[in-house]
Image 1 (spheres, rainbow over the protein chains, first blue to last red):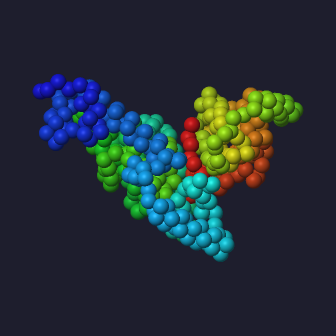
Image 2: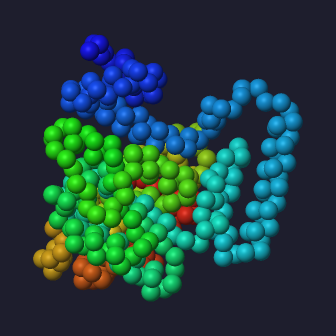
Image 3: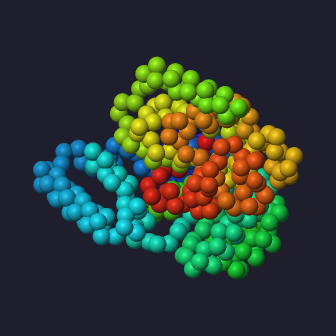
Amino acid sequence: MRKTDELEINAYVDGELSDEDRIEMLAAMRSNPELAREACELTNLKNQLQLAYANPPGISSCSTSPRRSPWTAIAASLMMLAGGLTGGWLLGHSPATSERFVMLDAEGRGQAPATAESPETRIVFHLTTPDQTEAGELLADVEQMLKAYQRDGQPLRVEIVSHGEGLDLLRTRLSKHQEKIHQLSSVFENLTFVACKNTIDRVEISEGIEINIVPGAEIIDSGVNHVVKRQKEGWAYIRV
Amino acid sequence: MRKAISMIAALLVAVGLIGQGVATAGYTKQKVVYHVNYDNPKKQAGALRNIQNHINAVGAENLDLKVVLHGNGLAMLVNPDSLPNLPKFKHANADDQMAAKIDGLKTQGVRFQVCANTIKGRAVNMENDLYDVDPEDIVPSGVAELAKLQGEGYTYIKP
């Protein structure tokens, strides 16, 4: 096996390795838990950075070409004018939805009114604590909320993303709330439990055991990417 | 009496800040909601310090800042004398120091919002057990309020 150095781990995390090197790296990680842990930590760090800068103010995305033609600028101003007029019209005509619109600031920045077209309340809870008492309180809160919205006939969608040490809630061997999870999932279709596959893989390597996830929970590749995606889609984010 | 002392302390803090000439350059208006649902007094004091630093950086005039307290987080406002009557709380953190911090932030426009579910669920008497909470500070559900505010464009921060 080739000697793997820090550069190579970074290249792996950044997806810069060739398929061949990538396979070799994966094999190396299987036989070397320390290497796997390091790669996982780097991936987490990278994801967290992306999360922190998911919506950087004032920094345009890399895809924007440095020199834009004047026509692009004119088209953009026309779009903004149209947007402003439409926004103004909506603000004037529909007081019920007016608070959903966010005004652009002087530099034309502002947050997209991601919830404007959706009357549904959507919340993603990001569970990262192994504390099962706190997880239990979360389930109680969520149940109360699901019931209240159901009673009032208001649409609600809730996702609980278990990530890092928060995965314990969804591990059959460790969860103290399996029955509650099962009961809530069978009553409320609008509630989803989500487990992070990165975490599962990491724990399986470090603990050397197979991880079983409670039935009904969805498994997604990366918990961090998932909560970022949800926020971009306009979901409210609550860290537990 | 306690309130009067902490109000004076808060005023002193505010005067001190004005004296410093706070740097607020470059920031436009921000809408922010801070989430507190833990009862560790050090963590809670730390959160209030984060908020003060946030105000110092951005300027109170540029900030619409709310703190949503629910579950254990309500301990921030529980009077220490009331702790024996409230078996569901492990901490009562509204001592003179915490009260002064809270008053200081309120004079700079920060609003503390308290979850009605927690008040009901833990049999809290708003007037006797909590420090300086008015009926207009109560929201039906802390979690629902956090979701609603984010829908209105507030940035969510959990210190």
